[in-house]
Image: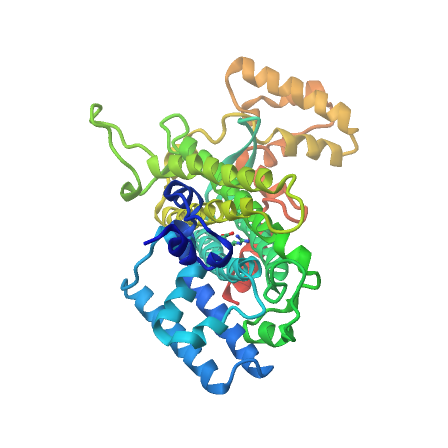
Length: 465
Ligand code: ARG
């Protein structure tokens, strides 16, 4: 084969006199990863062809031939009967070339009024739109896993921490619902991102639009896009939607990672709060006693990849002039990788949450350690008219005195309390101790049983929808 005819093999063959260097083909291909867009590419092309039929650029039988030809390609790809080649660069070229092979000259009309620049953007938007819907389901499933634990764990109090130091008591379901709230924000963020993803790019063509009288609103209707991008230059250059999506994924990964870190600590002998399901742990090849929380560690560890994907995208688009630049081909892998990582983490996390058991005994044994009732005791004094700063000092001194003796506040004799505040009587003992401290919380959103119960019921309803 002469180099000229090899160059002519490409979609752009006409102007070329020299064949591509094979290293160049290998370096610049995207088929190895954008084959994941095959379904979106085919759906996009079917809609484009239908629109070309509507405006009279394709006959009805041509539209049918293209539609059916593409449907056949879709089936073959799904059945694994499709051959990919680096020579054809990307999924768009593969599908189009195969269509021409199958239906002949009619297939050569498909690329009328479009370019790969708007095509790739369309395919990517369609893919991300589906990915968002899948992600929403996975987040909801994890929220359910937490909410489903709430009734069974309702009576369990766990120390709450600030600075990793014991601070105030918290009901276990208050912990669970804390994560439910975080994932609710993640779902809202994704829903918001979806609005911008759901914009039709196709028809912007290379960068300036097209002289073919296409009907972009018809294409949008066929592909269920809510709006049509109004500036063709913007379409070719815009990857905001991919960045936003990966930012949403990054926050989800961060939420998963902090939870994983917490449960890793909770599963240690030092904390002893939780027993992890063995099917999500591994042992040691040398220390026979070990049960290691590898799944949680890797959920935490893989967060780095997701952050890395966001970083890649942010740097990728920096300094690209309008409109399309080939750099943009590098946008797919970080998106795919971030999605795969976060979706696998979410699905495993939900089963981990369902399978873990609280070590009530070990939590209970040390619950009175750490003066978790000090704040509500101080507030008890405030409610009796003592200024907050004064009450803070009094309770601080009482805690010091109890610490020195190695006892809890409730174990101090009444005289100690009266030394600080003469009006105090036996009723102080009614508000001391962790259980009573929990009951004292009343503000909206607090860890008081009544508040938590309200939130549990509200979440059960919200997650039914
Ligand atoms: N493989 C390319 C990508 O994924 C397709 C777009 C090519 N457009 C172009 N003008 N070379 O971005």
